[in-house]
Image (cartoon, one colour):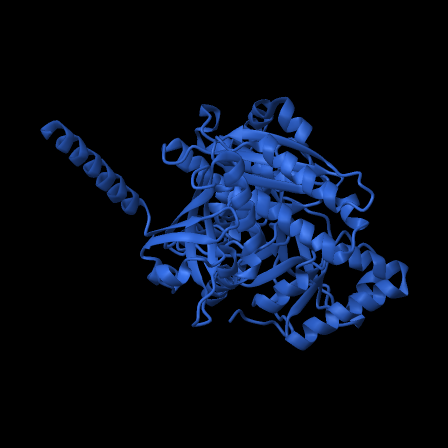
Length: 551
């Protein structure tokens, strides 16, 4: 008798212990039947959902979720039935106040009581919110970097998988717009449901996707799910093929900073419309590819560390007087000539996230040169290029400000040109930094204006002193009336905004005359001088009509 009582007591203790452990991991629990209706709820459901257990019971759980988050919840249901579990997913529930209630949800499917989904609900950690849209390329690359760090710290072993849905664009082109949108919503939901936190998934466009997920996620099953959904939607019933390649972020080959950067470079190149790295490349040997990229990163860093580059200077003249106003600093690698631009190396450094070191090195080199100019009782004004990618790196901003703190010549001797080769995403933060530079007395220009899709967005959001009009427009103005009209419109806009302009790639007198005629203040190009290392004979003109001071 005693043994029976002891056994029963042990069972109750184990049950109580299980419940205690469960509630230490979640704020509330909800049990759903195979129709997604709530058949049991317990815990802090009132504070999480706005309804008590009684009001929840019998409700369709899907009806509680915001419409735009339902596809991911449905994908989670489907995943749990197939693999036994889903989540964590960040979702939003409706509320009487009108302000959505944010939840982090995990689910387990058990074939008991006729089959059902057992959900644990939690308040989201920090600022986590629902993921209504997949990440873009830049955000996904950052998420992958965070996952690498977490994997190596042992907190969260993870895998990054790149997906190429071959034929998806063709299928969507023959679908009705509404049906195509619905298909894309479902595909993104399938992928996000398998992502860590339901967040770390990206749609790169052109049928390419990326997802950071836990190691036990069944990627072939995900591919088949997508194939089935597309086949069902395709009016011609042809469907698509899904190709995937996965990289274990816990691999020791990715354990250092440079290899992490190499992985991010691979992600960036894969996501391009005509990606440099294809799924086949990744499948054949991503480690070899990463090793080659790592070698390029190390070579680049060695170039910076050893100063294996030269600085050439090309004049920028005032078109009204043809006096040299200042020079632009142009970099040439050791062993290259004046015409050998390191464009490919700089583009690689931007994609790999290591351009910051190069920008700081160039700034340091030019600043040292200007210090010598000051000692010689001369004056020079030089413009240095800064990558838009560097501007988005807080460490770079701190280091540049520190570097400028040691600069003794007049501030207006050193100007900065913001290049558009790498898109700036946080324009507000970038503008705050540009304001700081201008407040110190440095003039700031937008380089290659018009070459990128974001040019006018930059001009609206960033406070600059000057715009450098991309040389392609100067060349087109020589050949067509349309080119002249476009160039005139840019010049007119900048005049209205009170911003100086520089016409680039001015190679003949008619181009210079036209630029002056439409109000472009400065010109730069072979007509006025090629890049040169020796500018010791230059003296600034005594007067600079209409010269502006940085504000």
